[in-house]
Figure 1 (cartoon, rainbow, N blue to C red):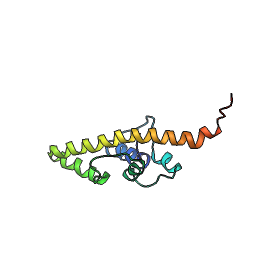
Figure 2 (cartoon, one colour; figure 1 turned 45 degrees about the horizontal axis):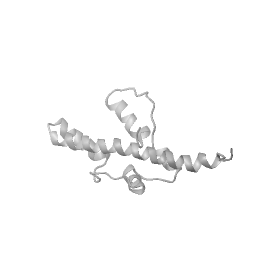
Figure 3 (cartoon, one colour; figure 1 turned 30 degrees about the vertical axis):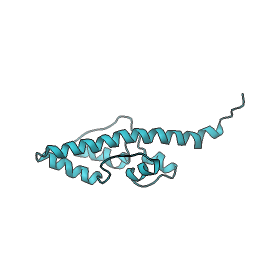
Figure 4 (cartoon, rainbow, N blue to C red; figure 1 turned 90 degrees about the vertical axis):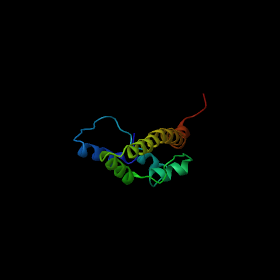
Length: 115
């Protein structure tokens, strides 16, 4: 599960690390857009009331932290892991919220409660 991973993360990982990623993948950017939730992950987190530390970090900063770690900066790696942990935890929370919203908006209205 990613946010904008179809266009960024997956191609980046495949190219940078000579990988072939063929596992099932849910890019939450598209279901979010279908619910008029647009912008980056952090903007959508705020709209949905999902909190995180390290709000000032972004993908560009994550790459910079990785390069710092490669040069021996252990604290950079710790910060990067913390940032990525928030992404993973928050993506799960967002997935649950988006699922509920899509269920109500797209599916539940078509299901009759008459038995």
